Length: 279
Image (tube, rainbow, N blue to C red):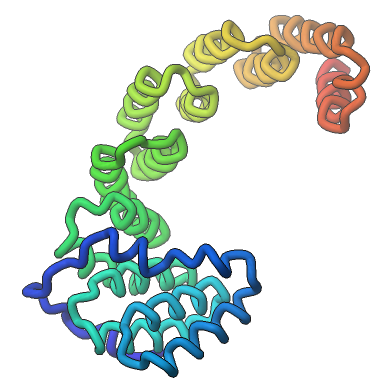
């Protein structure tokens, strides 16, 4: 590995407009070619235009996708040497180190990038994941929260990722509050409620978990999986008679399915699991 990425970043450098990144990395004509062929073609372009930093940056990204970390780092170094104002290099370095399993170096690169581009939500999300791997869950939570506030259209996964690091940090109340806000904002996304159910179960709040499950069931045409899940929760709560009733209802729901649905492997596995619970 090179040591160039460990040098302090010059804070006087101005960030490059994000549109330059888009134009630099878009390769529609060769998007479906093998990475090795794309690298060869870019290398030929570099021979003709050896002082073009964007070409090195693009090739570095292809090396990253190929998981050739050293080749990617070499190209990033060259791109930054040719144009010290190309701050996207630090973003690419951060992503590379995170994928390479070195969250500390990823965090360092992203620190340098975010110093000049503090509102780049994609970099904040990436650094949040680096902090998570470093087990700095509170710092991860802070970056997730800031990124969610900046992203034009936050996805359920963003809220779920934040909730999981909040739980790891012992912030269960905050995790549930964030999920509930997302549920209202995104109109009752099932995956968000399911994540909240898992947190309620960790806290032993059986009735709260069941209430959330009922909200999902009220909006679902298919009930068999939710009834089986209800039975599992009731078993954990020690309410065996209620659990038996839920599992029985799940079996009835499965039996009423059309043959094309009932005969799938997933439904067969569910039916077998429910029958085992009843036994």
